[in-house]
Image (tube, rainbow, N blue to C red; front, top):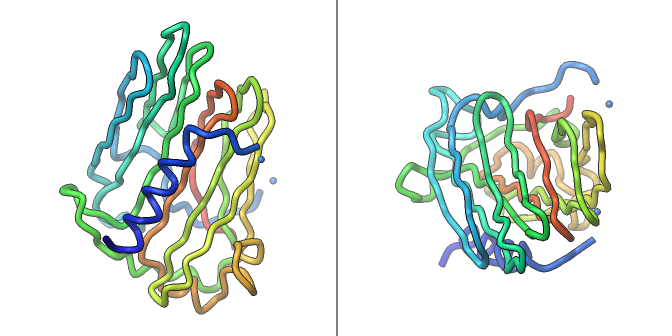
Length: 212
């Protein structure tokens, strides 16, 4: 099992466990206008995995892998995941703890396809939210797999936001000595973004960017 598969499995385990978390022109890595995917999970625990084709020339490769899961729900309200038309939405029903993660650096068949993404000269990542609604907090993790093997992650815990907000993940804050260095950022194989609710949480993300 390669290091990407091992890390994604770990994230899936974390997903259903509660762990409590501004604008000049940036480089947009994903604006969620391609790779459409819509699914509804009715009662938990349930999970789904999907591969969607990205636009030709995408900096994040040819396909996006999406994992979507929900935990047990006494009220059987379920949750809906929708990616497309410029937004990634997780809409969780009352009492439903949902999680979603996307992996970049794969093919439509799920095979690893290192990105070779050069983000040297950039200082971090940004997720632009249209809003967050949560009974507790929303956990968001960005995991980066540089070609040199210095894998690292950055977690933010977000409260409810009624209005759009930009959440930054500076390279210096990634969880290894020295953070995500410029050498690390110069050749990135894979990127994983995960969002999961401490309670029942809904959110909308309009873009994923690299900070200048």
